[in-house]
Length: 133
Image (cartoon, rainbow, N blue to C red; front, side, top):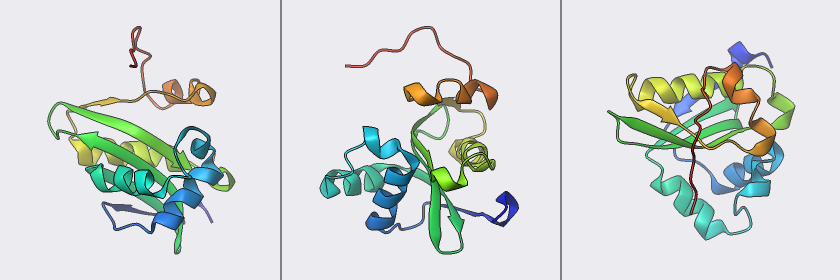
């Protein structure tokens, strides 16, 4: 399916099995607790902005964020099924996150090592200092 046939939705009730499947087939599951259903369910429930990409009834992309709607949106997860990558879906998920999270908010994320080169190509700037505890 072409990118323009992919449908995007926001804050839709999601089937946890579909979410876990997507995380696994996007490789994000390597860095998320996909074997802990309770934690994964809480991650989805407590995010206040979730944008999803669908090919028919199949979940093929997700952008999971926390936002205050005025100053900052933290994009905590961006995942696209590897079979659907390089079609602009991730870029569109980021654009929708920016639009719905507040057009004037700063969009912040921590990149997975494998995606470090991707984010500058879609408009992100590398920040010199990030701290994790």
